[in-house]
Amino acid sequence: MLFHAILFYFFSVILIGAACGVIFSKNPVHAIMFLVLAFFQSAMLWLLVEAEFLAIVLVLVYVGAVMVLFLFVVMMLDINVEAIQRSLTRFAPFAIAVALLMAIELVQLIWLRSRTDAGPGVFESYPEGYSNTKALGSVLYTEHVYAFEIAAVVLLLAIVAAISLTMRKRPGLKVQNIGQQVAVRAKDRLRVVKMESEKKQ
Amino acid sequence: MLEFLANLIPTFIWDIWNSLPPLVQYLTIVTWKILFVTIGVILIVAFSTYFERKVIGSMQARIGPNRVGPLGLGQPFADVIKLLIKEVVVPSQSNKFLFVIAPLLTLIPALAAWAVIPLNDWYVIADINAGLLYVLALTSVGVYGVILAGWATNSKYAFLGAMRSAAQIVSYEIAMGFALVGILMAAGSLNIGDIVRAQAGGLSNWFLFPLLPLFLVYWISGVAETNRAPFDVAEGESEIVAGYHVEYSGVAFAIFFLAEYANMVLISTLTAIFFLGGWASPFEGLAFLSSLASIPVVGLLVVGGLHWLFIKMAFFMYTFFWLRATFPRYRYDQIMRLGWKVFIPVTIIWIVVEGVMAWFEVGPWAGLTG
View 1: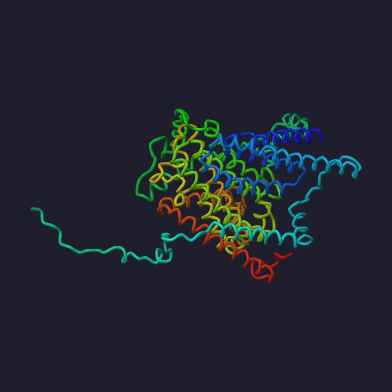
View 2 (view 1 turned 135 degrees about the vertical axis):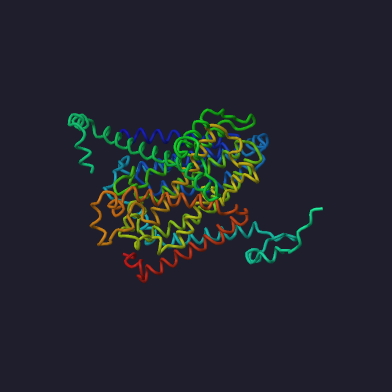
């Protein structure tokens, strides 16, 4: 257990440090890399409680796909650091209010839990051969199937909405006709001309 | 075999070994396993550069490297030594930290993915249940190195390469993931060892045949994911010089090179594992051949093992080089079209087909519903 505790605090400290890095770094690319580090550390924490499926899916979805797209967009922005600093002070009261609200909620939750529970829950490791992938699947597709399907439909709706919002018909847009390109044969493009070789004078 | 080797070691070494605490024993074994796999991968990478140049050389009616050592076999080492003693130039306007760390970010996932890959029935560093997801997660992390290299270099060519690579890898990852969904439906497990065991029993049980469309999608997506020709728009020598690694030299370039080839070996091995039965022999289950198993060399071909995985991997490596020598580079919009409009629909349709077949217990999917 001591080894677990050491690992837990090690990952947690890096996680909190990385989370602070996201907020405090001025360069947005650095901020994103800190966020990636934070995701990795939270995946590690999940691995510590033997939730390997969730941990790997977190890395797969957030690090492997979402953050790559973030990085892709942020790299192309022309960042004006001064403007960011100005907006930092402008939104400060609002941000502090949100942070306070969340802190209060968190403390309340912990306080509530500590009253109802008998004590700090001791984590017991699962028996050999336990697969939390299977455990997750067996409730996700039976008990929570409606919630699961509603989430899927909402996501689909988001995809369609995002595409329809960004798609605009521009006049004079040049588009390649792929069918035509594939159907092209050599004789459409190339004419072999037979001619006499020229005489050397 | 193992008992024979164990008997060779003097008993006092066994006594010392047994007196060690279990944790130390465990760590020693794991460290040796990791070292063996890593050194093996790096050696395969070294000789696959030689293999590539010989293969492409003969396809283009050239000789290929033949100066260093017998048959030119020393060429990879000469190249490595050359790269190691070259100066690493860091552009003055670059982001130094990210510039240096980017090659490592491409290499680490390429090597770390080997942790869950079984080399034969018992040799696997970490036999975890979510192995397939782990591999998928790590192959998608490798793109960070490419993007960061392109951005940190602070050069237009490198940046163009990074953006192309990011768009390409993200698009092909989806098709790759869907192809793997087909695999785990057929095998009924996310554990890579179990996926291979599901294909045991000879050639006809390999997933290659029932999942042929997924095999093609997975393999071509794998080529795209490693940024190899004909999908090498991220490097595109004739368009953007060398893309994301245009400013890299010496060791930093060598690490990019190592990562690219390590990824190729990884994708080849994964394709062999998922579709060609991994370490399993294609001649399993043939009664008349089982008597051959005791003959020294021929017997090895009948029984499964590391050598079969290696042969299958080498075949796919050869195909990588074959593709490179054969096809011109894809146009960027064609790459996107192939990924989004051809591969993703093909995989989704085949997953549905597989589901229906499994439901009605048709053909190789009979008994999957249980």
